[in-house]
Amino acid sequence: MGKRLKVGVIFGGRSGEHEVSLVSATSIIRALDPSRFEVVPIGISKEGHWYIGEGVMGFLKAGEANGEIHPVVLLPDAKGGILVWEEGKREEKLDVVFPALHGTFGEDGTVQGLLELAGVPYVGCGVLASSLAMDKVVSKELFRAASLPIVKYTWFLKEEWDGKRGSIIERIEAGLSYPLFVKPANLGSSVGIYKVKTRAELIEHVPFSLEYDRKVIVEEGVENVREIEVSVLGNDDPIASIPGEIVPSNEFYDYDAKYVDGKSTAVIPAELPDEVSHAVREIAVSAFRSIDGSGMARVDFLVKKDTNEIFLNELNTIPGFTSISMYPKLFEATGIPYSELLSRLIALAIERFEKKEGLKTSYEPKEEWFSK
Figure: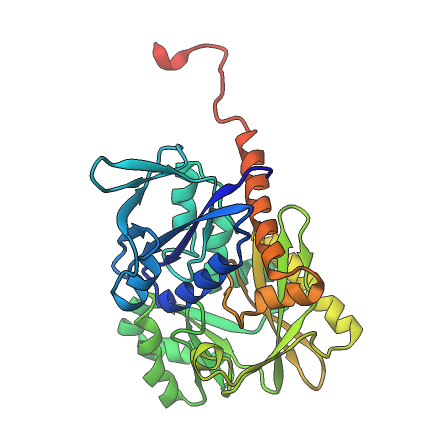
């Protein structure tokens, strides 16, 4: 990494977390060391249109560009470049991409797959790990297979809810106890999540979650808990940060408590017994490995206040990078400042890319059967 690398920071996107992505990307762009990295801002509108240029952030935020913007397309032909659609068309070569996309069409393996085809190193988890972690149902199945502690849950599809609502409710109430958390299976930032305490509230709020996904997960609520988070960094030998605690301003850590009202507080490090602190760090790394994670993830836990019983909640492969986000704050408290953390993530992306490039992609049979 001796030369100044051209880093494409991708943000926005077709997701309910579009606005959070813009804030994360702004923080990342400001913190990247200009002596080591040349930033190429790449914005994706809510309609899925890609743009490049210094004015793209303002364009996505307010609909007005405060500088040049040009439509672009990422070429899926292993050139590692983006094509700028302007007079005389030009290709912009990228050394690495930092996806600051949250939620669907960004954190779920879709953009990661495009970057794989384009032959560009990128920060964070690969296609498989991204898609696994994004689906709360599939990831919980993997956590359970790895003997990691999780809450009771069930799930269903929109078609099932529309056609067999009564039997779905019976299954939920037979296996789980109120209060319950109703969530879209594939989304983050607490978008579309509701805490329900009665059957009437369940019936009322499930359709709202189904507005964001065709699959809904229903989890048994754990009362009297602390919300603990751990950041993970690395590829084949990941490390875990010290744990931190979120004290939400609302009944639970919903979207408003995370981003809007500014009243939630973070306690870093979390005041936990040493054995509990050690356990959540170990579980965080195990969860990361269970999905074949790479680069980064933030792992969220519930810890009961009276017994210190631990429940693994979920794993976020592109955690928030806003000024109040826990992922960078936890590593800063662990001894890795924000700017250095970004540099390490870029180095990990290139390391993983180079290892994959060293693998064989063709096989030479004893006979050329295919040309006969």
